[in-house]
Length: 398
Image (cartoon, rainbow, N blue to C red):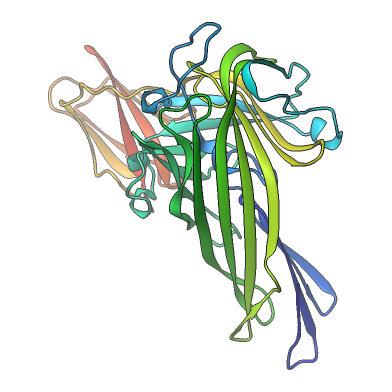
């Protein structure tokens, strides 16, 4: 906590509450309290939610035997999932517990509730407006409730999180980078697989909501030790699945500074937060079936579970489309769809979640589309002709 007196005789107190997915400041100036929250990096807005939220697995189910997850098991671009959050059991100590480690276990979580629901879409980073900020990423995840985009690398040695692009204070999106990228899983992943790593988030955010403070700096150092400590069957409201259980010990050290009348001031000694993060992963599912944090004793927080099996969301891109062009792409929202051969009978535009936002039926070799009223991002153009249907991505970048 930081307390200081300015030249106007007022005082400012800055209290910093941090987790990897939510950073919160409570600023008191002249007895007037202002709360600033940084929105979630990932799929939900729960405090202390790990970036494990952007993991996505799929493979082939094996029966009554230990499974193995490899690079090939990562869900492909185009997958869409629904993830439920159970806030009820988080408020009741002892109502949920992680169970035992070891071989041939059965973990029963049939009492899980769906208090809130979110949709997540896996897409190509190149189709997003901020791909250049995360050039090594080959997979991106868009959260429907917030529109935030998270970036990951699916490599032969493991799955890594590079960071996210989001709007923490309503002043415009900024990159939140993780250095080095955080490892989420080590390939091949099987019983007793282990890895360790240390990562850092260090970001400075402009802020003008209170006299004297023009920016804040947030730094988090995370030490993670991961163990695949069990295999067996996990039971959720979705069904029963052969799975691996991950147990991660996570220690976060958070520091905060505020620039007050041109001088950087520390908000006090770093805070240290320790938690166990549990997750269950199954082949041929596409995403962790269940994950939560164990803070201490029987207190469980941030319970999320797979509500609906992943499906190809929205519409697919047709790769055989050399006779059709969309230009300029990216554009400000004004672009042309042009066919080299037959007429375009109809054109439709969808957002990333499969919602139709534009349609025009006018047979012609070219159509001019105006989407300038829509926000920056990636969309799909679906073009109908007498010989079939072609889908192409288009990016609006204002």
